[in-house]
Length: 86
Image 1 (cartoon, helix red, strand yellow):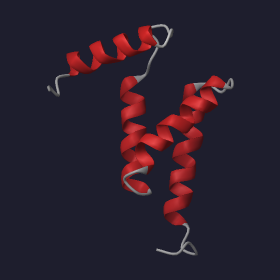
Image 2 (tube, rainbow, N blue to C red; image 1 turned 135 degrees about the horizontal axis):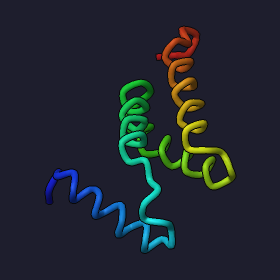
Image 3 (cartoon, helix red, strand yellow; image 1 turned 180 degrees about the horizontal axis):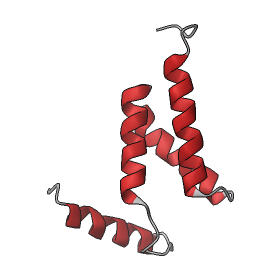
């Protein structure tokens, strides 16, 4: 297994094609950054689940940029909520 960026790009292309999606319209860096923000700002397992929910929002018509912006705002609110039990 490799961590090389070209391997990730090849995987995204292969998976997109397998799922019947266009292979060239996936903001990998943006989604990886968001996954990291959720994992570090909420709890680690929130990372992939957050990205999945963003994908559902995009599938329902929201732009990926808007979904990511709303998600980042929600992460910031989550971190700032001092009434939430820790």
